[in-house]
Every structure is written in structure tokens, then in C-alpha cells.
Length: 271
Ligand code: NAD
Ligand code: ZN
Image 1 (cartoon, rainbow, N blue to C red):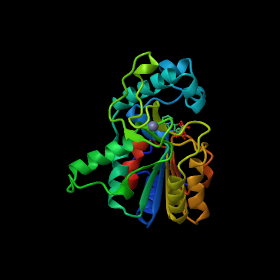
Image 2 (image 1 turned 90 degrees about the vertical axis):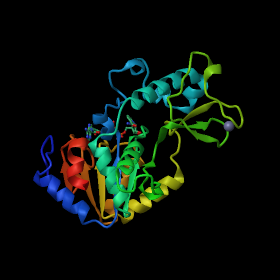
Image 3 (image 1 turned 180 degrees about the vertical axis):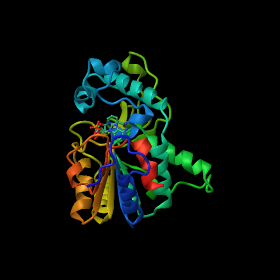
Image 4 (image 1 turned 60 degrees about the vertical axis):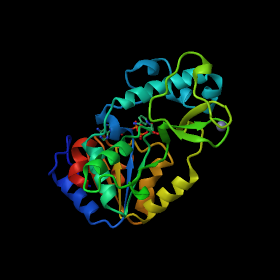
């Protein structure tokens, strides 16, 4: 296992080994977690800010909490939407966007609900030679835990985009409702105790098993089933490349474990 040392500069030996592995791979799967967005300024669950001081995610991000107090749950999500809307994708998001657009054998799966991979894709495509051309579906991130910028009905199957942060007051009557059945709309994210989308899981795990390389960025690798994606690549005979300033349970299984930050290290690996 190579270790690039903290800060992971572009030409450290670990970066070169990772770059060669990725460049030589026919199929790759990229798995990103909350650390991917840290340098973009997206607050983590247990940061300093507001609502987090008095409420734990495990108490708010559940269907029971939404039934009990939809105003409280929505005020937390509306706050997160506003915070995330103020953040922008960084060089690492853009490097991965270029990589997935240019490599048909790649698939990016993210645990993040912040939409930053999608925004980077739109940015990169908008500036490139194919500006205006639609983004192929295969290059779009597979959102294992949903998106904070999509809404879904709490009763029926209706889903819709929420490009703008939801605006709301203290009255349940101000909350967004389903245009089809009138029930409350909720964020289209996977809450504690809820299953992940089976079709998305099958696609990601199928791809991971066949992948030559799984590039794992900014995840503590403890939330399953997402944390099992790199294991699927390993079991299929592929290699893990990890980017994380800290050691994780995956580090000892990784062919290359780069102790660097996503925005600093990724362009040197995938560009
Ligand atoms: P996690 O918070 O458990 O772990 C984050 C990991 O990122 C840590 O291992 C940390 O060492 C690493 N890290 C920190 N800064 C980094 C950087 N600059 N570059 C690379 N790595 C860095 O995150 P998780 O494993 O994704 O699991 C948390 C859960 O919380 C997920 O289910 C996710 O959906 C959710 N979540 C999402 C967001 C988001 O959408 N941005 C934010 C917070 C939490
Ligand atoms: Zn409905």
C-alpha cells in the first residue's frame, strides 16, 4: 500500500500509482461520501451550525420524525438546502465530472445528497466542446441516498425537482404539498430505517463487481450498503484506490490509500 502523506501533492508516488491504476482500468466505479464535499463548504452532520446543536440527525432524518413534526424536519432540510445552495463544486468534483463524461466504462455512485456532482457535470459540459449537448445518463451520478433538491410525496409515488430551497414558515399549512394527492411533500432522501432504491443498488453493485478499480473518496466506509461497494470490486478481483485524509476500515484493503483531500488530489488521479 502506498501512502502519499498528508496534503497529497499532485506528483507524489502514491498519486502516480493511483493515476496509473485508473488510467489502465477498463471499467471503474467511483464512490463518494460527505468528505467529497467538505472543501466545497457543505456542513457535516456534526458541525458547529444551528439546528445540529439541539437535534441529532438520527432523530430528525426518520419517517417517524416527519409524521410527528413535519415543520421541524422541513426547517432542518430547508436550512441545509440554503447552505448547500451557497456552496459550489470544487476542482475534485469537476475532475470527476470530466472523467465520467469521457469514460463510458465508469460509473459514479455517491452517498451525498447535495447535488454537487450534478452541478459540476453541468458546468464542465457547459464549458466543453459539446456545450449544449445532453449529458448521457451513464455519466450522471447514482445517488444512493437521494437528493436534497428533489421532493417526493409522503403518500403517493409523485416526485418533483426542487431547484430552489423550499421556503416555509412555522405553520404546517405553509409546507409544500403534492400536486396529485395533496399530502405533504418530503425531501427525496433515504432516511434512517428506510431501504435504498433496489434498481440503483443492483446497477451500482453489478458495475462494482466487474470494475477493475473502485475509487473511494471521502467516506468513512461505515454506512452500509454503500460501504460494501468497494468490497464488491475487491471480491471481483479489482483494486481499491482510496482518497481520505484519515485512515478508514477500507484503508488496509486498498492497493493505494492516499492521505489527501479530494479537491487537491483528484485532478492528479483522473485528469
Ligand atoms: P462521513 O461523514 O461518515 O465521513 C466523511 C469522511 O470524509 C471521513 O472519513 C473523513 O476523514 C473524510 N474527509 C474529510 N475531509 C475530506 C476531504 N477534504 N477529502 C477527502 N475526504 C475527506 O461520511 P459518509 O461516509 O458519506 O457517511 C455519512 C452519511 O451522511 C452518508 O449517508 C451521507 O449521505 C450523509 N451526509 C451527506 C452530506 C452531503 O450530501 N454532502 C453531508 C453530511 C452527511
Ligand atoms: Zn401524492
